Structures are given as structure tokens and as C-alpha cells.
Image 1: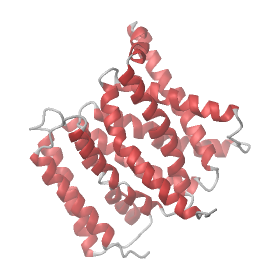
Image 2: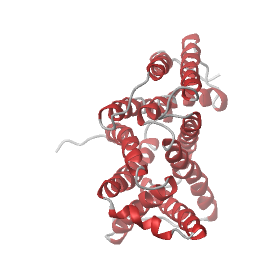
Image 3: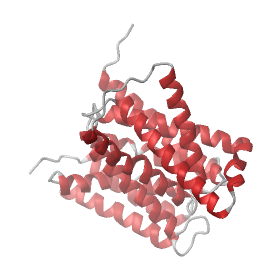
Amino acid sequence: MIEISKPKRAYIGLIFMTVIIGLSFIFVKKGLKHSSAIDLLAHRFTAGAIIIGILGIFGFLKFSALSWAKVGLLLLLSLFFPLLFFTFQTFGMEYSSASNAGIVFATIPIITLITARIFLKERTTLVQKTGVFLSVLGIGYILFQAGNLSESTSLNGTLLLFLSVLSIVVYYTLGKKISLEFSTIEITFWMTILAFIIFNSWSVISHLQTDTLNDFFLPLTNSEFMWSVLYLGILSSVLTSFLTVFALSVIPASQIAVFNNLSPIIAIVGGVLILDETLHTYQIIGGILVVLGVAMTQIFKRTKKS
């Protein structure tokens, strides 16, 4: 039997992860047709928690003892992913198209490069600086046009998606260090359970306050919503968390960010082909600037520490 090395397994996992994330925008849009953003978050992490529970019952999950220091690290990591990341993403998708979300998420490598320059003191070349400028210009152009032209995409939606991008970049930075303290399964388990508790509590309390608890369960009778929840909960939440944490323990965070370049392409194509979304001219122009900028920062990535 051919044995695949750990780094190769990490890269293979990242390819699957980018495809899953790219298609997740489609399923978020489908799910939001039948429920509110917070209800969708609650149900997706309920599905994730059920899978985690089944794995635990059958003995696939093994954990080491937790100390208060470790609990603090887990809470900090979980704050940015999945809590802030999925909150900003899901609420942003209420006011944005899947194709526009793909363009915004293409800036992840750029933001990662900027944070590396600020916090890791990495030097950048003139070409990389130009690439950063082009990507920022592209996103700025989309933000400006989204606030004036598009019916399917608003300025608020794009800003929320951008905050989601910032959350995942912080998660990459923290996860690289925190992954040394825990196993991949431990981090995935605790992040999923924490998200399950918080999002379900948030949703149920909101419905109790407005006496609309029946609306919380009503979407579960719709087959399209259920398929969306299963995809988002099992694949896009639990599996991608596992693959990301595993990759962070093996390869540099900056290389993981590069793989996110595939997800926007999948999201854009999926939005147009599956959801019949219109790809506006301003999105194409802004997207070209973003992709060109990302290419310049990654192809000419010859950085060294000062």
C-alpha cells in the first residue's frame, strides 16, 4: 500500500476544503430562502454537533485533560472561527450574491500578507505592494458600486463578508500556534460544540421574545433547507474545521491562505450557473483587479524577515 506523507495529506485535504467552501455560498443562499440567518446558523451547527456526538459515542474521539489555560485558548480561537466568521458570512449573504461573496473572499491571501507584514515583520517587494494596492482598489470599487447599482448586493452585505474575511485571517494566525497545544479532533470538537450552544441559544431566545418558536422548527420540513443544513453542518463546518486545523499543524498559514483562491472561482461559477445570478460588469472589473493583485503577491512572494 502506498503511504501518503502527512504534508501531502494536508494539501489534498485543503483542495477538498476549498471546493466545499466555494459551494457553501450556494447552500447558504438556498438555506436563507427558508429561514433567518441566525436560525440557519443554529441548525447547521446542530447537524455538526450530532455528527460530533455520534463519532464520540463510537469512540472515534479521544481527548486530553483540559486546564483553564487551554480552555481560554479554545474560547479565543472559537471566537474568530466559527463564531464571528460564520456570523458575518451568513448575515452578509442575506444582502449579497454568492458570486460577489466569492470575489470578497479572494482577498484572504492579501489580508494574510498585510498581517504578516504588521505582526511578523515580513518584508514585501514592490510588486507585492502593487498587488496589495490593486486588490484593495478592486474591493473598494465593488464596495462603491454595490452601494449604488446592484439589487442583489448591498454595501452592508459586502462589508459583513469582508469582516468574515478578517475573522478567518485572525483564525489562521492564532490557529498556527494554538494547534500545537491540542489535537486536530479536539479543536474541531470544542469549536463545533461551542457554536452549537451559542447559536441555538441566540436563536431560541430571539423566538421566545417574539413568541415565534414555531418558526424555528418550520424550515426543517423543507427538503431544500435540510440538504443545505446537512451540507453546511457536516461538510462546511465540521469537515472543513478538521481539515484546516490539520493543515495548520503541518504547513505554513500563508500557504493555506493561497488555497482560498480556488473557493471564490467556485462560488462565482456556482452563483451564475446554479442560482442564475447575474455577474455585473463592476464585479468582473473588481474581480479582475483582486485576482491580478493576489497573483502578484503570491507569484512574486520572496519575503524575508527583517
